[in-house]
Image (cartoon, rainbow, N blue to C red; front, side, top):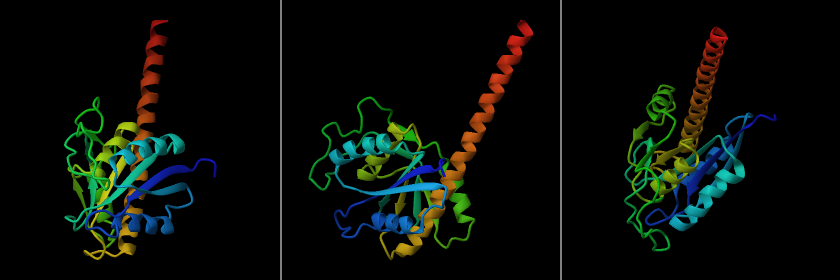
Length: 221
């Protein structure tokens, strides 16, 4: 199939009390399940380091030219699979795995304070929760001002909003790796459906606009 959709899904390496990072375990489970024949899925593990993220994220976008990038992170506070609507530019004071944090405490000096994903996370959340998956999904607007938020903002900035972030709870609290893999699969499939819908609507609006202009020119000629 020449017209495969390219999707990148990332998880994070262990950090702090997370000796096993549930996000990377869940992403590996998703890789095992796949996203169907029409999707070319690429997964990778992201270091919990600001400077590594700063070089890795642009190279992922440039090298793969994906339709969508989904970052997955673990949150010790989460009890549901949580879809993050936006990423934040400022407030990065927590030290990473190399005991480093950006001197500016922000992602990019020139960017807006907050960037929203083009995806409506409330809509995706509702679809997945209505599907009897057996894993609860919720929505958040605060990805935590650490490597998760930092990575998300960088991807949103580079990908013009065509990125998403999913927080998962630690393994067994309450979900198994299989549960989290299934949840990621359902979430990413809904994201792709919504992107497809958005693209169709945009094309429709663009065509209407072109037709309208053509009619106007015709009327004046």
